[in-house]
Amino acid sequence: MNTNLAKHTAAHAEAPFLPGPILLLGAPGAGKGTQAQVLESRFAIPQISTGDLLRQHRRNHTHLGMIADGLMSKGQLVPDDLVNQMVAVRLCEPDTRPGFILDGFPRTLAQAEWLDGFSPDCGPLPPTVAIEIRIDETQLLRRITGRRTCPSCNRIYNIYFNPPANDELCDDDRTKLVQRADDTEQAFHKRMQVYRDQTMPVIPHYQSTGRFRSIEGDAPVEAVSAAILAALRQLRQEFPVGGAL
Ligand code: AP5
View 1: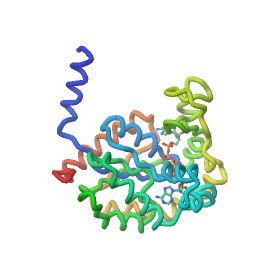
View 2: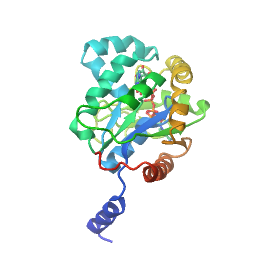
View 3: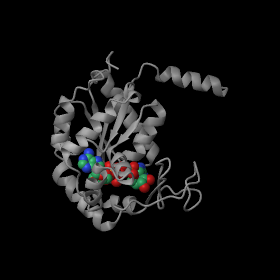
View 4: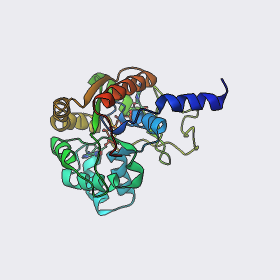
């Protein structure tokens, strides 16, 4: 099959399927960012990572960035009202109209309840669907301490599991990779504690709506992506995006 025909066939196969707004939930290092990037390129909808947005605020020395700075390096959460406000602004940008992937939000029950009631001025949201990437805690430390990120395009690598071709440079744009300040063993243990105490209660919240699936995350990236795609297809049969987008 020639390439154009292959692309046409793939686009045709995808045509009836609109993923709409997706929430990716899971512990630090579970693979939310990695999978959000896969979904972003597959469906041409934006990844909205609250961690990335907050890191951008830190780099720009905004008021929010200064508040977030100390909290993030200690592995603590940024206050709900500040994060909700940041997300509200982002969700009104026009690129979110065909759908979006929220990566790392909601992270508390209060954030989830806020999102349930959120009705943007720019038009109603279709029902969100939530995917939990589930993984045993013992697998996570090497994922966190081995992670390297491209500061230019945000592509995620891992020196143990998914290294770049050249040790230190992004395969896509040759930028020098960086390690996140909170990717230390000490900060990881704090982040896990915060996850257990504050974020895990979000899981039963979405389970109770039915708009939820849990995926095994301890598998190769491609296998996790395939499981997420299958879950999204099922969820969107039950909860279609409809005409709202
Ligand atoms: P954030 O940036 O959201 O961090 P996180 O939730 O702790 O998640 P991570 O980014 O660490 O992991 P991930 O699940 O995205 O995994 P990844 O795909 O990178 O938040 C940082 C901080 O910001 C928070 O601690 C908080 O202070 C603040 N914050 C953010 N959102 C907030 C909110 N809503 N409210 C309040 N505060 C907020 O993968 C990890 C590694 O594993 C990578 O190296 C990757 O290559 C590798 N990997 C991925 N998948 C696989 C696989 N299948 N097999 C092998 N390796 C894999």
